[in-house]
Amino acid sequence: MSFYCDYMASPPMCEEAIKAYGEAARSFIGNPNGINDLSVQASMEIARLDSRFLCLLGLKGKVKWFGTATEATKSLFDIVSRKDKITFLVSGANHKCVFEALNSISSRKNVQFGILKVDLNGKLVQDNLKALVELETTRGRRCIVSIIHINNELGTLDQIHEIAEIVHLAGGEVHLDASQSLGKLDYRQRASLSKMDFITFSSRKFYGPHAGGTIYNDTISDWHTGTPSLPNISGSVAALQYCSNHFNPSMYEKTSILRRRFLNIVKGHFPKLYVNSIEGVPWCVNIQIPDIRHHVKMDEILVCNDVAFSTGSACTTGLSSVLKACGYARSHIESSCRISFDPISADDRFIIDVAEKFSHSVLEYLNG
Image: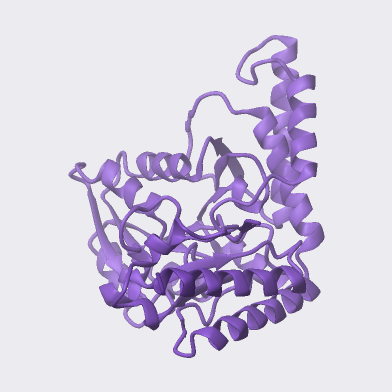
């Protein structure tokens, strides 16, 4: 029996999203960028869905839809860096797509960027953040600080409200990768989203279709990105509603208990187990097993295991860039992995089975 424990990479679409996607595909056939009646109907439906999407998040602004979060980030960085002298200060624990977006504009003479340090948990080190932003703004440069809300490998929840206050006081702006957090936070944490200048997201991370987007304010005009997919947008809104219905304090309490149970079982087999994500959301567990350090790499065990887990971001090959940014040694990274389960459906029996199966599979591989 196989156990899927890679929900941080890609949870399945919820039934509500599948239904909404199908209904939109059948009901709206006009190109929303056109001028005929069917096109106008599609355009009006997208406007309604955008409004509903923002309402569920308690946000104001505009939404621009893309095929993926990577496309959304690249397009955002492209349009804000076309004219102004601009500096991007990027968290070292950001998702790979942010660094790809920087790469795509790095040849522009008006663009500069720097990497911000993070601690062992992947949280941004705030000590000299204000000085770094002020250094850029006093030089007459626009400064955008790019951070990640819930880290995709560690599950760490960063203090985005505090970071935004520091950056804004220094005259900068904040870009937030909220792919892992949209729809999964309580009202106090959702309130912090309103402090962001730009938010990029991936619908598939909250049980929606493969779509991405950017929430932004009126500082960007004439942002033309092609024809939006109405079925993807409809499915995304339904998925966000699904998350809003299920993510609540009791669910957090349940998944916290399940996380502790998983760790206790695995520690019973590997007493020296090290938890890389002590401040993470409970449905993401990033661990290192010192016992295997001098034997094999964790990714070699991955391919011979009935538990579907990962050694890092699904978009990354080689060593985890996040763990590397946190300061972990190569041997530590190679013996680390991420287990992430569905916080909505996971129960006691599932977690016990996963913990035992994972532990036994590692032991069997090590013992030949």
